Image 1 (cartoon, rainbow, N blue to C red):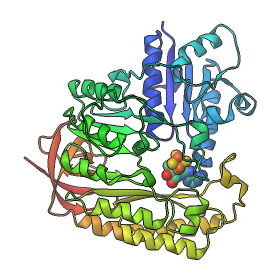
Image 2 (image 1 turned 120 degrees about the horizontal axis):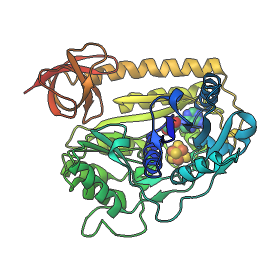
Image 3 (image 1 turned 90 degrees about the vertical axis):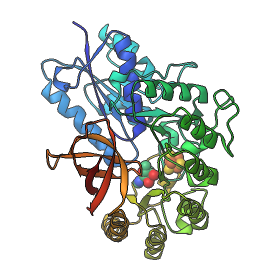
Image 4 (image 1 turned 135 degrees about the vertical axis):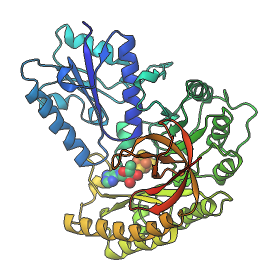
Length: 444
Ligand code: 5AD
Ligand code: SF4
C-alpha cells in the first residue's frame, strides 16, 4: 500500500499554491494524498507566521493530531513560513515533529519523508529552490476545478517594518513570463475559468528575461505580463497583491483594454497616517496612495478596490488612528481587511515598544470596522439593479435552491440558481445588498 500524506494549509494563497505543488511532487514520487488526517502516515502542516495567532494555531493542531494518533504515530512535518523562521528549534518546541520544511523546500519533501522512514528522527531543509525546479501543478491537486492560483513572483524585498514575509519567504524572485503564459494556456485548455496571478507584490514583477513578453507593450514588466496573460483568452484573470509604490497607471489601462482582466484591485494601504506610514517604512504616504486610488476610480471601467489596514502599530496615537478613519472615508473600499498589530520577532518594528494596549487595538479595530461597514453598505447598495458576471462555485450554504460564486469584482454573490451549474459563468441581476455579499437572480 502506498504511503498516505495529509497536508493542512494555513495562511495566504501562496501557501495554497505551495501545497498544490508539494502534493504534485509527492504523487509523482509514489505517495498517495489523503484528505483525512487520521488515515495518514505523514501529516504536514503548511504554516503562516504573519501574525502571532496564526502561528499558535499550528502548534495546537500538531498537539491535536499527535494526541489522536497515539497508536499509529504518523510522521509529522511543519512546512511553510513558521518552519523557515523557527527552523530546527521546532524540534525542541513541538514534541512529535520529525520534519521541518522551509518555504523553498516544497519540491524536496518526498526525499525528506524517505529519510524519516529509514530512521532519521529529525530532518530539516531550509535551503533555497534549486534552479530549474518545476512549477508544474497537477489539476487533481488544485484547490478548485474552476479557479487556479498561478504564482508569478515569490518573496519580498520591501521590508515594511512590521512584516515577517521578507524573512520567511526570502527575496523577490519572478518566474519567467513564458512559463506563466504556458501554464495559463494549459489551464484554459483544461477548462479552468479563472486564474489568480499571485505574489506578495505582483506589480514588482521583474523577470530576468524577455521570454514570453516579446512584442507586448506596457510601462512595466507586470503590465506587459497582464496583457500577455489576457491574450491567452483565459475567461477571467485576477491578480493579487499589488504594492502601492509600484502601482503604475498602465495597469488600469490594461484592465480597460482587456475585459477578461477582472475589475478588482487589492491595494493594501496599512495606515492613513503619514507619520505611521513612515515608521512602517512603506515607501508611500497618503498623497501617493490617493493618487493611485484616483487612477483606479477614474477608470472607464468600474473597478472594485480592496485594502488591508493594521491598527495599533507602535506609537499610533488617537489622532493617527483618526487619520486612518479619514482615509477610508476618502477611498470607499469595496472590502477592507483590518488587523491588530502583532509584534513579529526579528522585524524592525519589534524593536519598538508594542505600546498600544490590546483594549485600544480592539476599540480601534471595531471603530474602523463599523465605519467601513457603513461605507461598504453604500457601495453594495449601488449594485442593486445592475448585472454582474459570476463564476458559479456551488450551492449556497444558506439554502440549497441558491447557488454561490464570486463576481469578476471579487464579491460573494448568492443567487436564485435556475439552471446554473458549478463552473458556469453566468450573469446575475443584483436585487439585494447583504453585509458580506450581494444577492440576485440568474439572468438567462
Ligand atoms: N501585524 C498585523 N498585521 C500584519 N500584516 C502583516 N504583518 C502584520 C503584523 N505584524 C497584515 C498586513 C498585510 C496582511 C497580509 O497582513 O495588513 O497586508
Ligand atoms: Fe510584508 Fe511589506 Fe513585503 Fe507586503 S510589501 S509582504 S507588507 S514587507
